[in-house]
Length: 163
Image (cartoon, rainbow, N blue to C red; front, top):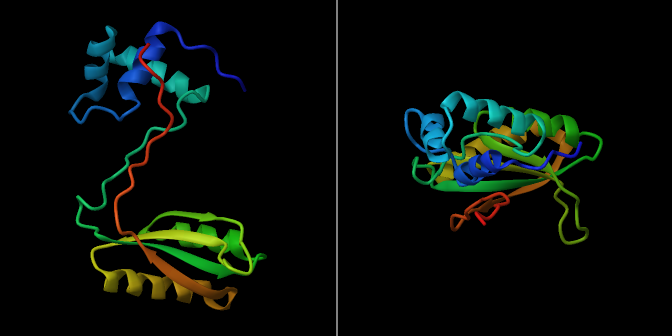
C-alpha cells in the first residue's frame, strides 16, 4: 500500500514527534498546541498515519543504562535451522529479552543464526539468564557467545526535515 502524501498538518505532527513524544502528562495536547489543532485531532491523525504505514509504530524506547541495566549482552546462538523459528519465539517471550531475531550465518567464521538481547544489572546476572536460555534451547543449540555492550548506540529511525 502506498501512503497518501502528507498534508501540512500531518507533516508538522511527524516533525513534532519524530524524536519522541514529549515527556509530559498530556503529550498530545502539547503537540496539538505546537501544530495548532486539538489533542483529539492529533490522536486521530496519528492513528490514520499508523494505519497507512506512514508511522510504523508508537512505543517506548527505554535507556537501559539510566534504569540501572549496565550489563547488556547480545547473545548469539548456533541453532538447528529446523528449530530456529519456534525457539526464537520462545526466547523472545522471556521477560528479560528485549529483542530476538534470526540472521544468516557466515560460515566458516560466524556460525550463529539467532540473536537475543539480554539486559541485566551485572555480568553475573546476564550469565545466569543465558544459562536459563541454554536450558530452554536444549540440544537444538550447538553453541553460543555473549557479546557485551561497551557503549550506548543511539537508535533513531528515518527523519524528515522541516523545510
